[in-house]
Figure 1 (cartoon, rainbow, N blue to C red):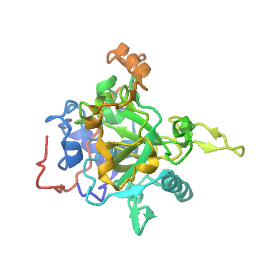
Figure 2: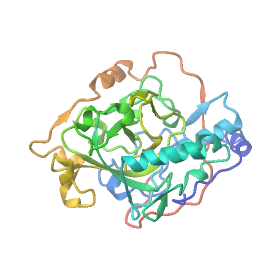
Figure 3: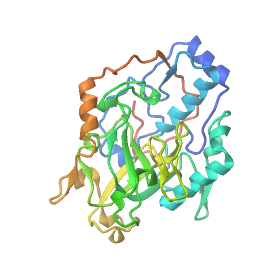
Figure 4: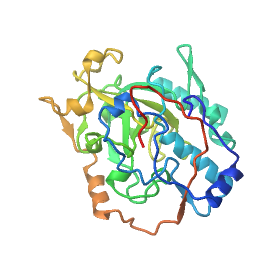
Length: 333
């Protein structure tokens, strides 16, 4: 898969491909895992049974199946270019949302997601879906998402190990940042594929006193709507709450600042940041179980959703050329 292009095939061909030929539904790394991820990832994917493009309803039309396939493929993107990382902040991501609204991006995805690429100018470079960015923030909370019914990208499976870890991030420049309304947040997602063991506990070992630095590709979450601001400054909430549909998904790296003061945490100064898995073992590292209640609910379900789930079928990803990200990290299967 080329890093800066999403290949889209006609919806009818995608539909015929799903119906007409047998598929290998297992997950495949189309590029080597990003080095920051490979350093802590397990040697094999514990969730390999769910393919790169997930599933969709058996009732989905050809065009709906094509759109869902492209969306899921973007969510599972391990091919972002870490040699070109753009620093973003909350204002940039909010402005990207405003520009998306102006361009009516959500309504113009019928022919594929290519218009999401190189969409917004930042410091002389255009970024968009697939561009690797880096954000400094505080974690408001973290939890397992969709454990009661699953997501199409994760094959509608239920439970803590087979769903994303949802991380609302809040602006570190605001006074008492973690008290901000979640509608002012932006989202990061840790996907279940090759998820490092240390990251799998992020919802119950959430760093709350120190800023974090999150790195990964941008994804435009067109399946949802952001919150909107009322004239009195309050928010009209949409779920999941966020200020922008532009999120970091999947997370490639998460680092914790050695200082609790965000002003002492220069996002470009690697010496003040420690990878989360290493930070956990440091004396004085404070965490909270911000997602404990939801995790317990997930575990009680034990993989069984509380209500009947609509029948699904696996989706065939659009074919694309493969490129290696780095010769030092061989492709995994």
